[in-house]
Image 1 (cartoon, helix red, strand yellow):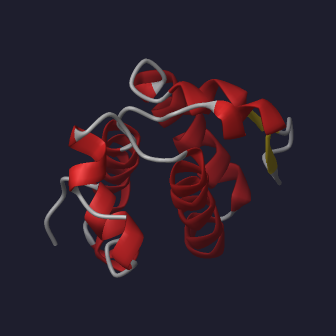
Image 2 (cartoon, helix red, strand yellow; image 1 turned 30 degrees about the vertical axis):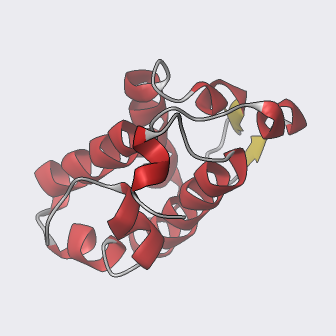
Image 3 (spheres, helix red, strand yellow; image 1 turned 60 degrees about the horizontal axis):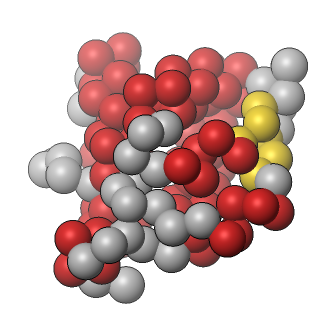
Length: 117
């Protein structure tokens, strides 16, 4: 995957799902699953128009886990960057830059976001 994939019509559903999974795992480890669920739910609402795959995400009532419906695998994600950038901006506002810097250490998150360390 390279940055030109987003400008040429979208990224694959697998890449978008992988990015979501990385964010969920990393955030759950650092801020806990309930806080992760809250951040991710808000970011999903903000970015759903750009990435229809997000409408297939279900976060459990207790925030412990999420599920992505198999139908998501048939979707193209025009732009995942708005979702990732929303998550990172929310975290920067809530916690400062250390968690954002930690997330940007992941090559896929760094490549897909528009954030700088």
